Image (cartoon, rainbow, N blue to C red; front, side, top):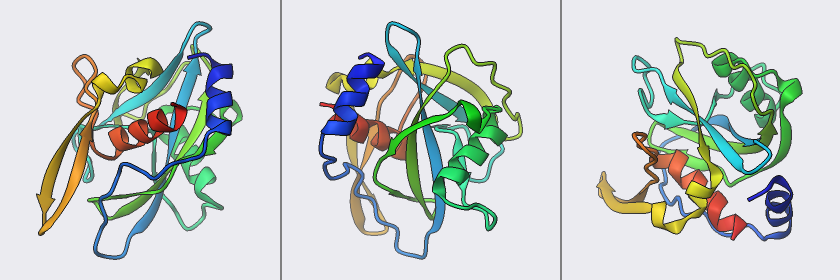
Length: 189
């Protein structure tokens, strides 16, 4: 899919209900992540990170750059920009916002809003090793192919919900990150 095809489909299609049905049963803290898309001239890629292994929440998991809202953050976009800059060194001046997806409630007690944006190709990222152990890209087409979508019903505290997976090479992309990618894929169809 090209940048123009993405923009046309994203802007013209009506957003359907999210595949992510998990609901947390206590007060939630707000968070925002950036879904960075890279146009290499032939196709689009999704930039992802692997979280540092020592982190309290989601250690070692594949995720988007982002994090919790701080008191000084003006809005969720500011949060996504600030956290992205802290984690991978991407300056907000290089981020071109397209839109957002539904908010997601996650098991760690956050309501996460994903902000979709284009970021430059061949940018020299500077990962914060305290938060990120790896920065990598996956072709968007991988996530658009339904054959790469896997889900399982899981019971937790008496409630059943689906957990989504989208494995790629040696990366296990799952949970809210996979749900966001699945929602994006459904929206683009």
